[in-house]
Image 1 (cartoon, rainbow, N blue to C red):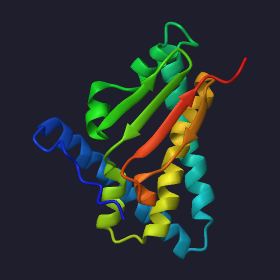
Image 2: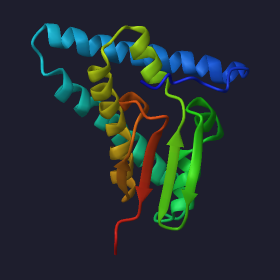
Image 3: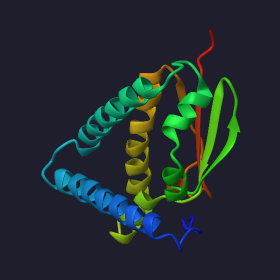
Image 4: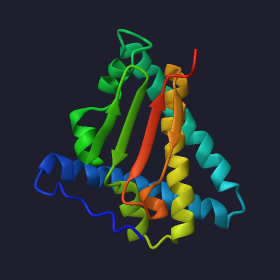
Length: 166
């Protein structure tokens, strides 16, 4: 199991926003567990809700992009300096057709582990959370691929946005 240890611990803004993200991940985790207790298809419900959130964010990002098909332009809209710090992101490749990012810390996984949620369910919650990014990619017309994840025991989450072949 990846320990998901942050290396940015001396930035008050980062710590504060991470706590807010953890708080929201706590809501998500507890809502899903409670929905399951009541016999609801919690995974389907959560996926739909997170996808809708991604759709809203994706539309906003697309509207903010001056050049609608430019990957570097998308990168600027998607990766604020604060978000890079929150998730300890490293852009491993940025080209005209591809944006590859490693997320080296995840406050959502941290929150779910603090709740004592089992690792198999954390993998599902993580994948549901990534439905937001999948939908952002769809809204801007890019493909999305998820490699390894912290929730699956990898040292980082590997996220790839790419322009579809012409």
